[in-house]
Length: 342
Image 1: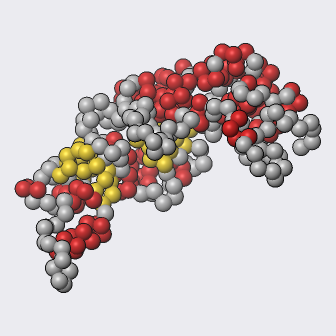
Image 2: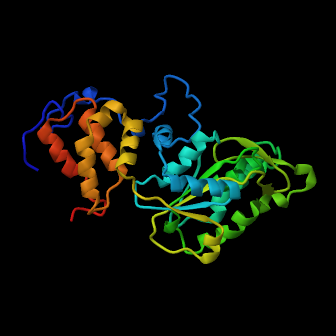
Image 3: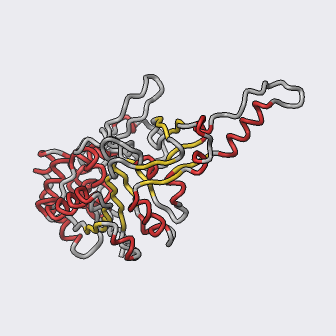
């Protein structure tokens, strides 16, 4: 890529000479702010929508279309999961964070799907080996160096997964994000059928315990402690379930019957302007008409996400702004089709 070098804008210059240019870096985009501690002060409780970077900002800025609102509200009334399909970057996952933020439903419980995802892991995990090792230590070695103090409490070795936590008897429903279900093994959608229909599950390791060891205190996916009686978990308020899907496969009719399907269209020009204003402010929007037009023109012939537009506008309007020539080059860099360069 040829053109005039904008040294004032560049942080990394490619000269091989060390420098402290990183100290000139302006604040990050709202959706790339992280909240980890540097170890010098205690951590604080998060914002209630989860630990995903920028989740709060995205939740505040999300602007669903009327048809999205209708389908989402229908799913809430009917206590049915939402199966959300759309191109990358249209806000499928952000919808879950928006729901949790606006309805004050606590941190989003996220279950990222891979080809190895199993229903059992999403419900709970039991560290049987860890419990056995501690029991052996408590019994003591040959010389009796460690006293026998009994078998360790099973609840210390059992942790509920995101789905298992969502199905606890909360007074208000939790939001569960099942992200990219089409990446799963072919059997996983069928495995979910009974869970979504009945809203309950058993933990066999706890159901086998005698009455005098009930209930058992276990940890939730988001770090809380709850009691489970006789190994049975039954929801009180069915969770708000958002299942994202990139449309890469078909799902069984029995699974689809238990969900409400929603297709999110890429945002039109007026909706894009609302998103830019909500994420980056009115000043950034006022300076972005040409970039929005360029994005819409490019999106007509290629797969582009709204994130790409926000990245472009942020670079063009924040901190050390690039020169007009560099700005034109950034359009070609940041608005490349998601499928790769043609």
